[in-house]
Image (cartoon, rainbow, N blue to C red):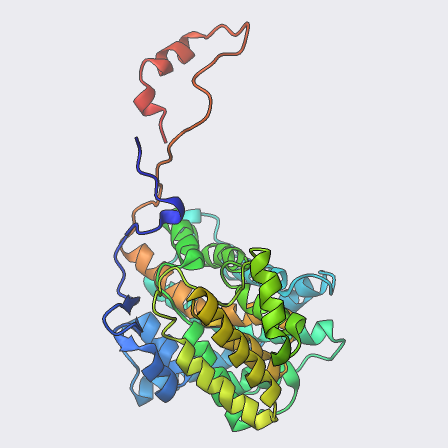
Length: 394
């Protein structure tokens, strides 16, 4: 009997030098660096450079990347026009998916040979940087459009995190907010062969272009069992209301065998290593905005759920309320994930292209045995093909 690994659980499908979870220290490593160290010391631009190039940048390399990123922040008119074609009731992830598809179509316009659209390693690094630079404008414009607010153009005197907040809210954010947002971007940037990254690598393995791979990854990330979980956490907080309601709410939810989003992880068994860093950032926001009620609800739900189920929070649990305090709409949370994770996705896409093998797993068929349409008479070509079935496989 075939040994089926549902969800590919426990299956190692390839090698990667981009990231890993170190089980000995329960740390997520980006190119060998613990992510909590990167979040505490580095701007997001430096971490993006690390993921793409393998090492942290020196001062000149960081300045060059920042200069390039700032030149490509503004959205082309036709990209914005494509977003405007969508109803304002469209989920923001669909806006982002559409925008990336249009950006990719513009970038590869005029390339008639699909093999040429794959791009060289150098071209795909440039494409990665340009796409990363434009995503904050896509996400910020989407939120402002839904609120009926005018677009805010990017500024080239602000770093990545500060400019992202500027375009979204039209005001310069306080340093504590910029720092918390920067840390969240770093924590969300990469996480090995998760569902969206694996989707991107599968698409890249067909020799499709980088943008197609990212569009596919966005589709995977939209699901509530992956990126959409940070949205779901805020819905849970809203539903509960206050710390005093946690016990009765949890009684009802567990009795109904409801899945509580923001808890548990396929990889981490002793708790998500990114949570302490994001929780510390959340604590600074709670103090900044004077919202002890948020901390009380957070702590009450975490403590009671861990006590009852022994399942610990994942990164989505602290990031949801943190983004809410910053002023982002709940529907914008997963697009923020995209803006961060595009660095990891594109690092993996380029790694896949550098040592490519088409990803094509097998399946165990459990349907009806071979049967035939009544009255069908096979011709010579059919009969010949049946005599060499190994050539028809695939």
